[in-house]
Length: 357
Picture: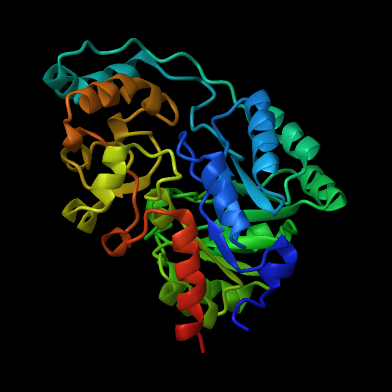
């Protein structure tokens, strides 16, 4: 049967379908549990959460499902240089974004405070609550942490955007590798080279990885239907990760206007931009993202850019200036159909065997 892959046993799931773990307060317990209860692997993006918040969410997920689920963290959760943010850098960013702040009628914010990495403290919670699956982006945890996960029965999943990154992840002994194609919505999880030079399509990357690494592969990016899952499995993937199609479901925490935009004609056009967070990410094309292209040297490092632009985002939402906001979404967005996670899962499960050979 199409669903009898290595992922089924490694992850303890019925169907090799993973829900992308959304960061930025877009994940919910309800969505994670709905996917897991339907036989897939629900995912919760926790990189921005405190250890206590992760502990509390994990407790809620366990109460909502007795099936396996995934908690996702960022190994490298900031891009701030050791010397910190200089006044010169900040003033350049202020100059570039001042017209947008003026347009919505709010003052430019003060220089963002320094950022303290959360990752090391978050790790201890993962080891304490022991989710079935621990996935990570922007690198790989230490050998000691990976060994502890093995001893505790936690399956580890790393994300790669290039063949070199996949080879590196395999050398560390992760259980599965996500082949993250540039079609995907959200941040590009590159970690060996800059994201702009790590833009390989999902199915090309999948084929490269199948030739060069033995670790089971999860295809991610541009997959929203059973037909897409069947294509990934045919090319050798052991599972497929679906992101944007779950993001538009009622159970996600995306704003109603975000979901509305993903179901509109606007979904035909997406852009990779650093303008909104400081990291390269794909979302629906907006005026701000287009106008900032070529000015990346004046964007603050992640997550200081997120902090800096937060008041602008809030004002733009309040004033319904949608062309000044980045709505995360992948290139597959124009064919999205479902608004209920359970119905989407059922559609994926029923459609995949019709195309898998």
